[in-house]
Image (cartoon, rainbow, N blue to C red; front, side, top):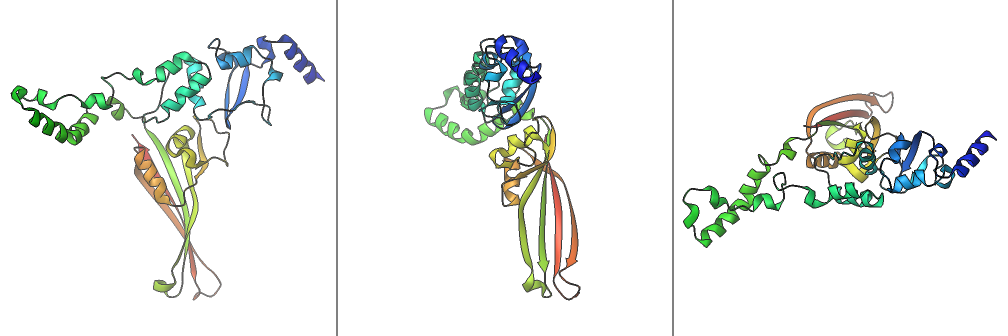
Length: 297
């Protein structure tokens, strides 16, 4: 009865802040976030401001656990929430979802954030795009003013590979200022060795490949191939050891980590052996567990 009275009072109060608790739990596309009510109201006339200021608590959609539900990209919402907290935009290196995040900013009616995410935001000095490589390499050579058009064309063709590679190194501070992070990939497998080792060896690959590390970093690297069903409510800045991959081959995880700038720094493995029966002449079953530690500096 007390809850019903509170709900009625909240509905009657309309847009009064008292209709909502100070701490708000959000379910955004399956990702759980906890923030203050005042944070959601920090940008006037935004979508969240309208939801939590112009409506009562009873008018908003909730999930089965009573959390306010927003059907948007749960991973990208962390950047929306960070912006609401302090008006800063901090994106990880090699962030590939800039265009998608801009769409999210427009959906949540955050025009200033959407403006920052547009391509013109990147200055020519810090850009590693085409503008950084279009300068004529002949200008840096003494006595190059009398070069013919044929020479310029040949030089341009040659430097399209070597010049580009050189420019990416010293001219791009963003590539050198990567945020460090660790991801541990675990892998369990077993195989059977018969009496005739050469002919009877039978290998079995276990599909479950586990991932340990910071939640946000794991999602950035593996994206949709990351299965979060064993730890679905883990906040982005917390660590987990319960994720696993949808890959069937360990090398798929290695390739992905290499593409994202990681390299292996450590590896450890354990193994056990057991007989299929009490007869020592029967097949032996070996089980092993290996962990590979990757780092991006």
